[in-house]
Amino acid sequence: MYGCNAYKKISVMEGFIMPSIMREEAIPKEKVILAKNYPIFVADTIGVTSPYQKLHWHNVLEINYIKSGTGYYIINGQKFEFQQGDVLLINSNDLHCAYETKDLVMTVISFDSTWFIHNLRFDPELFSPFREMGKHYMNLIPRDHPAMGKLRSLLFELQEEHVGEQRSYATVVYSLLLQFLAIVNRQCRIEGEGGSEPSISERQLEKMRQVIMVMEQNFAHPWTLEELASLVYLSPSRFSEIFKRAVGMPPLLYLIHIRLEQAVTMLEGGHMKVMDVALECGFRTLTNFNRLFKKHIGMTPKASQKQHS
Image (cartoon, rainbow, N blue to C red; front, side):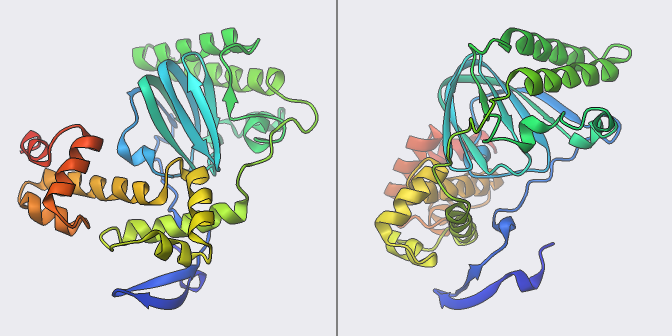
């Protein structure tokens, strides 16, 4: 839990208290639970579910291999467009979200770095690709990188071993991931100050974290752009510009996504009327709710409710 002294209350708006000073955990770290004796998760994902279209961060390291389709990541305010054959590395403290543009299928590998703690005694640079991200390494390893053939082969074999669960598969998965990390460390390093300058500063990113937390906690409030901007003492135009760089979409569109995600959850419960769900989630009219729900979710609210009843 976060310490109470990490927050300073300065004003009250429409019945809720507005925090002005927050720690980095303004967007709570997602704690991924992995088995202690085999701390790795490997799976193919189709598209990007709504929770991962929102900014998040977690306590594990992540490797993504793009099997097909296209999309993009927003990582610490930088946009990385990807397509089939690309690999992405995501550090445990990277604030990120992902979006599909077309027919996206990717292999997601999440693992606990402490699994390799004994290897660091004789190879302390093993995790340099994550520690030195943005300086000597990039989040995106492009499909035409000279090392990609070997990296791709290791990831394919790793997934095959993980799924097959034959004798000693955990040892084989461990060794394949170790090889992958070593090759990235050796062949993907950019000498000199090769990384690009972040498009958004850490201070700006922290301000956006603060606003997002308030939006998610008070999603039904009738926010205006001016109100949101005032939370972090920015002009509406400047706030909108920074928010879009950090999140990948304008603030009020992001608010719609938050509300729709809440609406889907409420509809799944099956005991609320569609009109009541709309009002609870901050939509002023049923017509507007139906239109936005169909546009972003791909079906009507009633159809969604029936699907889960």
